[in-house]
Length: 127
Figure (tube, rainbow, N blue to C red):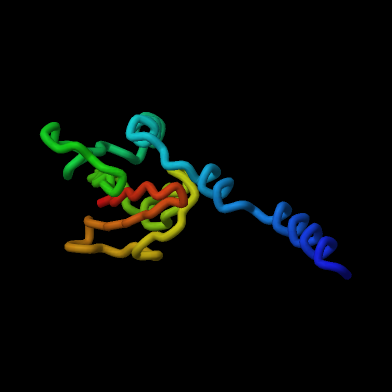
């Protein structure tokens, strides 16, 4: 096989692989409006949910959030059991990392923390 054939073969193989630019495009970061819309949709459709409160820098009108600013969301529910499973989090996007994997009470029996980083690099801290 000469070098021309090798180069052509390598080009064909590399064109079949997922290009990093396409991967980034597929996981483009959602806008703040999109994130808030998904939170509101959840609030209006989940009967277990009593209230959600966005706090932290995104709730402060004097702050300008940057690309690394997370969303701090306090969640009030009627029943903690459905929240413990963590299945409800997937409605906000494809999960890259979440901590803890199996949420348990944080400060007291009625307080659970779930920190989530999605594949589009949005981070939401649910408490």
